Structures are given as structure tokens and as C-alpha cells.
Image (tube, rainbow, N blue to C red; front, side, top):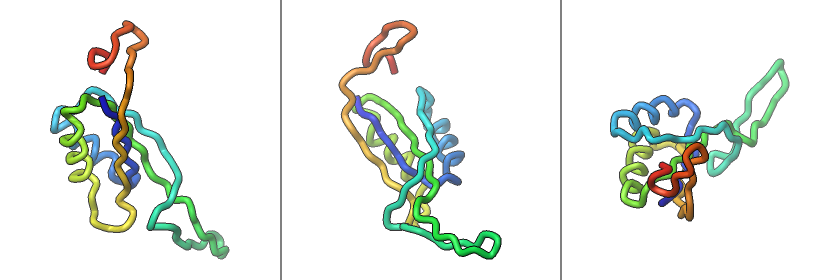
Length: 113
């Protein structure tokens, strides 16, 4: 099993949810609002005449745990749904998952997904 984490633009969440639904990946995901920066670094805005330089940008983190055979397809769905070809599109991280347990039933691993 693998855990896929994707850090994406906030305005791309609905596009990603729609793409997952279209492809049949409805077994679950976790969504978190996060702050961070990469190559996009910062931007300057003015609030009440004061210059504010924002160094931590608002992003969305999506987490999905899946069987190994689905990893490449899920990664491709994410890329195709959120890619704008501009700085700030985000990153995808794939990590191994040792064990999954569904609390309600006690089912483990693939059965718990």
C-alpha cells in the first residue's frame, strides 16, 4: 500500500474531486488547508495602504491511501486535474504504508481501504 500526498492550489480542489469521481476513485481522501512555499516563494499585497509581503502561501493537501497497483493512475489523475503549467502548481509525494486498520470493524490493510 502507498500513501499519496498532493499539495495543490486551493482553487483546484473541486477539479480534483470531480476527476477522482469520474475515474471511480471514491474510496476516500483527506483534505487539509496548509501554508507553505516552494519556488513560488512570496507575493506582495497592500492592505489599508500597508505593504504586506506574504511568505507562506495557502495551499490544499490531499492524502489518499491506495493499493500499489493504483498509484500511477491516481498520480496521473491528480496531475491532469490540477496542472496549470505555472509556478505554484504543487508537489506529489508517494510513501509506503505498513498497515491500515479500520477502527469500526477491525479490518486490516486492503480490506480497511
